[in-house]
Length: 420
Image 1 (spheres, rainbow, N blue to C red):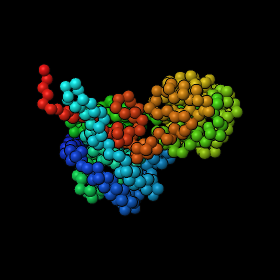
Image 2: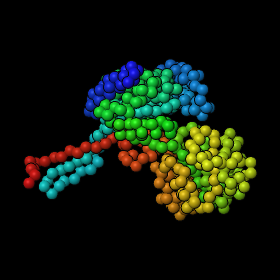
Image 3: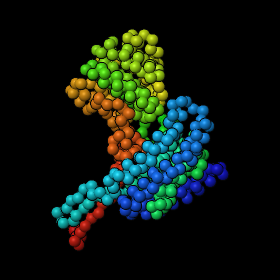
Image 4: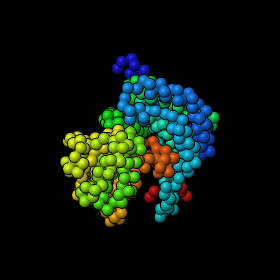
């Protein structure tokens, strides 16, 4: 272990111990105090907007990444305002703590309650998008969890400026500043320390690209709530309304190309492809999209570039769309099963029977009928914000909000019962 690694291990231990102590206080705090902290943090984001945007400008200027990546990294007054509004929206949500999840009485008179309780200390590892830190901090605060945030090196200045505003909110509400902490360094060894932080961190949530998620899942000695790639599909069924299909697909692909809910593959039924596919391609080309298409799609629109064997397994996160022609719902489902990442899929159709077949046949975390895949978002689900999208099968699936950041414990009420 080199000196830098040892230093980050020590830093993580100190942060984890402080977070554990802060989490115990936060878990016992009233809803009003947590909500006051959220509103004060929102005010601090607005009051410090110039400093936060200046820090972000330094991060963006230092980036040599693609335009889509820089879009994820960039803040502007509107995005900063949305971050602040997101914290205020979280404050308005019902308290996730203290909920009675189940309540029953045994034949011996013993009453048992299952109660919602915080998980404890969350470790959040994320890349590029600075708003993720604010969303994670807000959701963890409201749900009674302390959080240790480690943003990507490319957003280090932005993350620090945002965190200072969050801490100001905690201070205003007389909550421990250690409720929300940020990695003191962008060094990768701090991530390694987090992944090895059993006993200090209760749950790791990675939010970023495939390589980050794979590293976390491979190396973590702490439970992980992760998502795979956002390889989302929009399937245009033979009985789709053409104008709806055009509108939904354009939004699903091009509204923001760099988010995990963006559609990466278009599937279109062979019965309508000759008439509708050229229109869809023209719409998207006008918006700046490029394509990779299978042979059947290229037979209809000959100037489409040919897809190779990897294209349908690629999360583009850019203005690129894979295109395939399929023969009905079963073929669409088979394509998604073979190439998808179990994130979000959508069908566009006026045929309810086909829609139900698709909704029941897809095994992804989120499946939609006649809606853009970009609605896979905690805010759009009414969660106020999200800490990520979970595609696993344990504990949570889809957008992860307040409810998914709680676990439970039992309370038993007796009248002197003893076991025979």
